[in-house]
Image 1 (cartoon, rainbow, N blue to C red):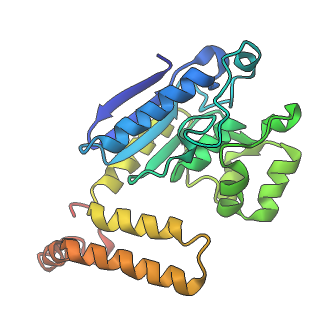
Image 2: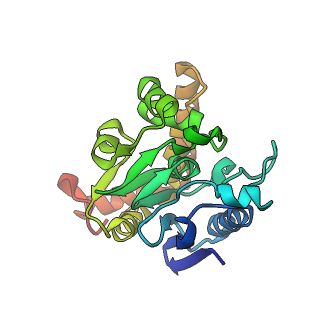
Length: 256
């Protein structure tokens, strides 16, 4: 098994472990990734997932050697994406913990995640530009939405490397951490997110994603409908009662 699952509830960590090919993903590995994320989605104890590549590399993309050998990635309009979970829209957040290279299809896996915790030596890039391999796992969609069309075109057309510092300035990285700390810090962040009232957090997340493609009025209506669902859940009453008891005051996020 190239894909490993480690459960430390409420965190669910998925590990790509194939150092011989710098965690490149072939067809079987992509299927394993999809299975792992479906398990996360269906696991009620798991509230936030972390995707991490072992041995100092997040993911170097699709395994081109495997394509030549007939073990290439799935190429179909319906169902899972070539890299696995990239067409899924989960109900719970996923954080990418990135060391080393997150390039080509590996970049697309990182873009699919809600947030990216990035080590100082991390490298992003559309390295597949060299070989005529297209971005087919959401790269041309998610990258412009994250960093803007001009910067996305800089990456897409040139294939150049983008380091952690530039990625942070562009909004491609959410946090930059010391080398060897991406998984630790991503799991710490995951636990912090998991501590929040989950109905409200998930509904706000849904609204933020769904506003793409809606005009401003429809987006505002959609946000309000999600807000009503949250209010109907009663979470805000529990939160209000906690606030009156002194929890969370003055911007304190501890012991909420």
